[in-house]
Image (cartoon, rainbow, N blue to C red; front, side, top):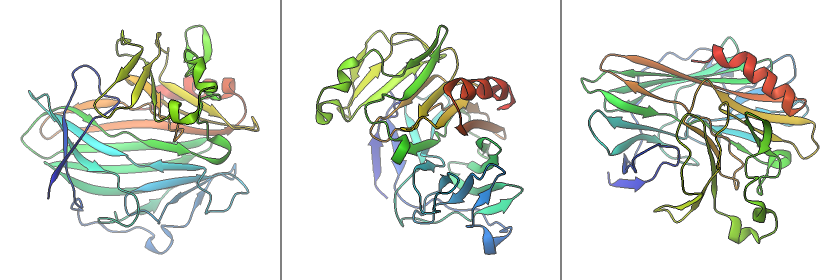
Length: 314
């Protein structure tokens, strides 16, 4: 297997070189619960449905709005996009897992129970992952349980959930994607008004980031090794929350976590990132949670729910 190399947009501080091994991850033996119907949608009282996207071998979920067919891809979530670690005392990072589209690698053995879909996987380097998505009344709670079965400590472990929005939620110029500051809501990209008028090939590709616990970068626009411009908003948000309003203004999709270094989006995908990081000692288990709200309502409705539920997240 040949190693590859990339950069992670969300890592704070030092620039990290990341290596990953290209190839399937080994999977721990499991017992499937409800294997006959594990790929059927789970539905809540509001009519939202959660299902496994079977056209990808890598774990991908879809949330289906009421009345939409199960083939609808308006809300598709990479679960996770990758898993990246930094060993204690090192500056370089290693990707233990990376999403690959289509039928490549080993498919995880999904289990279904009590409104949840979950799978387990050994990622290598002694790290074991249990990933669970639970459909709640107003969206989906994502939970990662990471166990370090090695004698090595990890200073950082990072498993970003990647909700990608299309159709009525697609917001390529970030005209309907909001964050929240101490003085209220503001468009994520409000400090870059030229994005609204320049040709798309001059705007894309791009990343737009806003700090939460991490220091606000002094440089407003960074060009990294990948050649993509990274736009840094000049003031921090007051909670790790990002929301996109549908074109008809009837729906809000919002992601939030208990904490995160920053929030950000790739406008071409209209993805929402509020990804916590943690450390992992030998023999330790760490839990990371975040929530994706899918509601009929307003930004204020979404924020109220996020404030109320945020402390319940790990």
